[in-house]
Length: 128
Image (cartoon, rainbow, N blue to C red):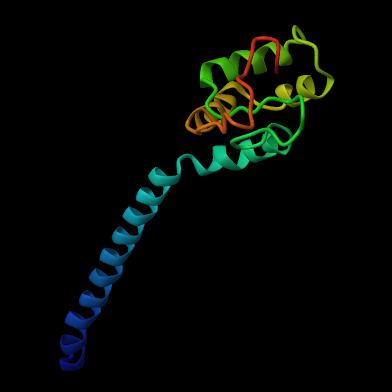
């Protein structure tokens, strides 16, 4: 190895180790950010539901909010819609578009939300 390479090698190793450490630190920050905000993919899917069902309170009169509803209950309702055992033209079509694992992730995200009870009636058995 030449004298110049011997001088550069420690600096190159130092740069590589610095990059590795920065990458590890950033991945840790990303993981903590995901833990703080929950399942970001589920949140993105749930936002399509939020058009009618809202996030904390329902923006559409007569359509209940899903905030705070147990994930198991949401999954059961979606399965009932998908099997056409529950009336609902739009919800039956939507329910058929998701697999069970996806619905569980959406349900877990909605379950983690605190409903705005002042604006939102409790979710009943007769509501979707």
